[in-house]
Image (tube, rainbow, N blue to C red; front, side):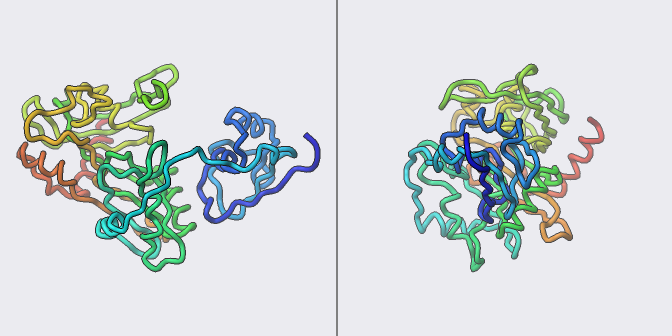
Length: 337
């Protein structure tokens, strides 16, 4: 390489992006391994200092890249279907708004809608965000994700500043995300802590998470049984203390109680016969975190989606519990574990 290092500035729209992801977007020829080496040797610097690949960016920061990096060319996204945005989808999302102020937008994401685009996905929430501005000068920004088949509360920042503060709350683990799930069978212990490291297995298109004490990343989930029908089914409240891919699904399966409708982790045993829906029975029931404006606490909860509400009815479960009651329950679980 020859020449002088180049200084590039982080744009407002790139706030909270990981440094390695930002580099891959800018320079399509840079592999993850190459990025890691350039960071490790200090050839790529953030605001003049060494940085790690997972550093979160802020608007206005400067990234120094070594001479010759531009030869890798501008990033070119892999070919993917053009995003499909239908007026009916945007109208449905507007009707699903759970909370809105000048900082935050919270929606009740329906099952079956992907949060972001990916291979083979032409319909996803990220493409619809321009329709959720509600008069704001900026489109709302995603600060966390839900799996495509998981329903429930999803928070968006209505500005770069709001998104940065919300993302910081998630990183500092001051955001408490509560999930409800219907599982096959009943956990041996009514409540407890699942501490089981997870690692990705399988090839492209068939990836899944599995317990791996040698190579897995730490994954911790608190759970409590709210109601059960003998040994047939149980309604669990779950509070993830880490945010691994498919963490709740993998942890439930490892307990021997796969989530109803989760064929990927539970196989044929994850489905009930008869009137029960075959959709995934996992719902982001609610979230509680410091409000990004700097004072007070934001608490948002979402009602069960229709397919889960029907399963609750068939099993005789009463879904009228409050989010506060479940959060109080986990104070007890934490004290006992």
